[in-house]
Image 1 (spheres, rainbow, N blue to C red):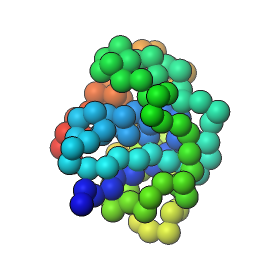
Image 2: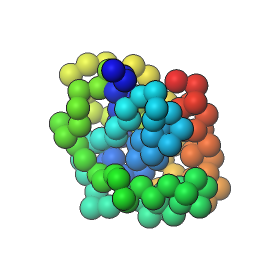
Image 3: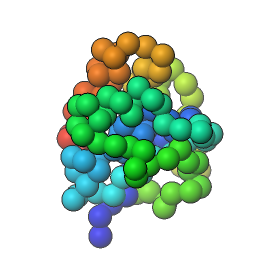
Length: 125
């Protein structure tokens, strides 16, 4: 049985969504990947959706949506994405905190830098 890895952010609309998508894309045969937040947004960040399509051919809107932590299976590994926003306490400590800056509202270059760092870390799991 594959281990379940969850990426957690506050809004589950950008970094955690990109991490879930990259996890499924790069290592989905080894792990089950999820993302969640303590709050939700009506849609995934538009720049994240656009750049993930351009860089990897991934359409996050087809398989993902903003959801809270109680809407995913109990994970074996929980990774916090944020450094500039606090992630909620989920009843246990995080296994890791990737400390990634939120690229929302920033340039494509800022988004791509975060995406590439997520890719590097997913491959290193």
